[in-house]
Image (cartoon, rainbow, N blue to C red; front, side, top):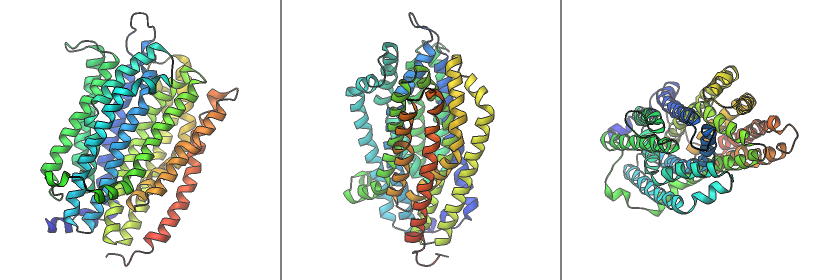
Length: 466
């Protein structure tokens, strides 16, 4: 086992090739994940009218938009914990601490089980209050409760997949994590029309069908990722003894993971706040933002996929003390992420209208959605820099720096600006600039924090590790 660990490709393969070999599978899986979110929204938007409800599709999209902050919060805890496990496990591999590798993985599984229990409890007592704080519409409230109840009670798949995915990525087995995620995404895409519209002998379930398709797809991903980890991840010791919670290991996981959780949770908080602010403008603005967010994920998830390659590469070589490979990982990580986001900017500027058209929205909502896409995407270069540098900060153990960037781009700047802009006469135009400005300010802060990290950490490394 020690020989395999010594020859781990993250310490030997040329960094540009390594970044692409690890990043491309994760990018593809994340893009497919975004695709099924788009397909999910497309099918829901085309739901047939119900008795007494005309335009049920737009009501359903609005309900999903209001439910989305809770789904994001579930993902925040799962992914944030996984990020902490990923960074600790990759660093321990680089330092050749074999026993600690097993304890990091086992404690990650334990924490996933705890997170699942917490959100089941929220599903029992918190859904009504969450939805009623954003809308008073009875139809939207009913749809939102139906959807969110299923997604919280059965969130075991997404929480545990988030942990096992990071265990595979930490050892460079990104193809396996990609296979698991792709299988779940395809399952969701196939089941969406079957369960929403009642094809192949299934009853027409409407928005409940969308929820069932989602959780079944998540469970497929979890099962496959767990099988791959225990069957193929031989570099990581496994067994029930490693699942026993250990305070010191959990502390190390959350030194990096807690800021990552807060960072992801801030996305939930931002979406929740934006829903309330846009609700003061119009219901169409809320629906437009929900559709835009699904389309935007197609680009952002690609950036997140590359970020998930940056973190273990930089963390592993930082643990080895290889300064040159750390610097190379940072340099190519930023470059490749900026290229992805730049391509996304161009694509959305050109194809905004046909992308929005597939959702079959009303004219007012479609116009607002296209406007949001064209304005907010102008900040994608700044967003790309923020995404890449947050991956670097997590790898170096600078969780606070990553958190500062998130707080700036997701709360401190965007929400007050959006609230202020919503008071203007042309609020349905100017409000979208809040997102662009927030990304630019956050990028300036991220660059300054990176200069400090380079001076205090990277330049202080002993030797190059060559």
